[in-house]
Image (cartoon, rainbow, N blue to C red; front, side):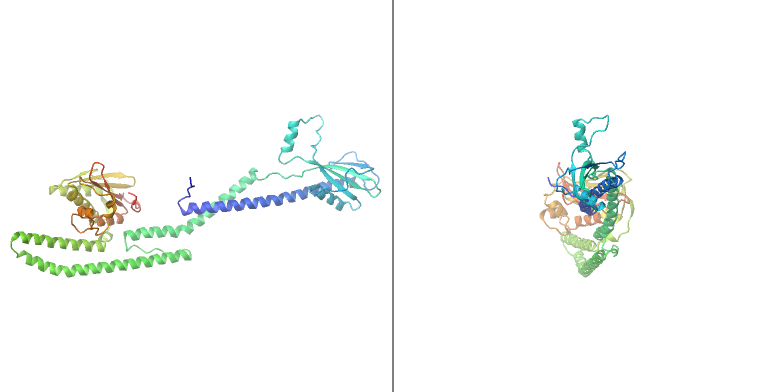
Length: 469
């Protein structure tokens, strides 16, 4: 199973930076530990050499040997007629100690040293078993080792010295103090990185918010051009795109308005002539066609202008609006019913635009489904409006395509009833302008269900439609 990365830029950046800093800190600590171990190793060798040299000086060497009553420096010192060690000086700790003694005692010659791994002798009155000896060997820091040194005096005698030396370094990687310091450093670094990433990704959030506003209203305020050079360039490019879109839509609206204006005069003349036609049946059919043509022109012009974005918003009761729509349709003997609360479903919206969207959904359900059943239920921070019918439903491929303007497939013609092909496109625009969503789904018992989600009160927008439905 592949590991899942966090979805947000903030989380991904923090994770990547944390891994990078963690690896860098670990390598730095390993290098530090290596240097620290080498420094402590050399320091202990020099300290042990100084203790042996001081003990020899306190004993009066290289003159006549006068043994002291005690060994205050922890060094055992004896004079021997012959050396105890070979001519070669081993490397490492013993070599550093031998060099230190030779530097402190210029009269000493043939300084030889070695480390004896024998466990220190037991204290008086105490015995060491094998288990305790193994524990001493495995202890951290490691137990001391015996340094044996032999050197020749100017008169030909040999001085033999033994001292305990700590040749190992403690394992500091898991010490509580280090872990606490590393944890505080990591926490401070994470907080600083979080602040930096939040500031760096703020233009992206502003861009997403500006895109949402632009999708609902072309006349939305421009995106503020602030922050880093790249963020300012992105904001300026977005604002230029918004201006071009606004100019394009305005040009299209002016074109449709001009066409509508130019067509109204011949339509009026045709209506006047049609009213004088005989027989009455043909006159009525022609007048109906002319009325339908005028309605199509008005609908197309309203869709192009985006009237929903121009209407002022206010708080309104969605339950009351649904009840009014159902009651008006019932008065003209249409099978429209409403089931839901009588009031209390407060939303912020444009009353005329919402009524028009609901009227379009109800008309589709009545014409092509035989009936319309309106429902209203709360859905978290939103209100869920449903319009159900008893018609044949739609193929799954058409459930999304019918929202496209002027979609003229067979299923779309059936759904729109031979109209302008803009009814559901207007409903989607109204839903998006109110921060909501609209989709269609086939009912298991047959028929079609239109679902409209609108944010409750002053709740934030619900986000883009769910295209996976």
